[in-house]
Length: 101
Image (cartoon, rainbow, N blue to C red; front, top):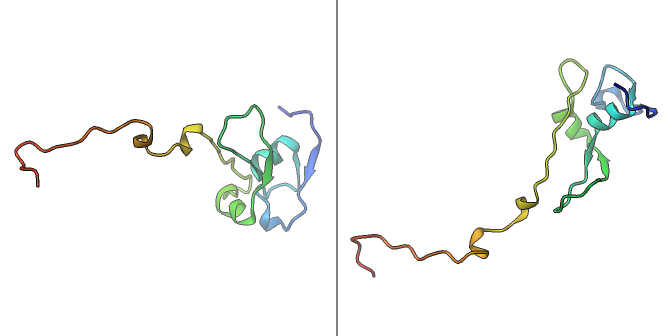
């Protein structure tokens, strides 16, 4: 179904469109195929979006069918956590049967 929002007209060179089969796209389809979320280090209820670069469109969003393909973005707040050793003291390791130097 449609989102009920206005349509978007792609204005660049058609070779730079994510969806190369149509000049005019529904707003929601335009956003899903040609934009990406600006993800931070925290989970937020809403995020801003920015346009994909021409390189991102060519390498990730264009499809052989010219209908484009969605890119799935995911953010995980634990992704920026450093090594566990910063949080928990690691036990000393020793090898059985090897003399200490």
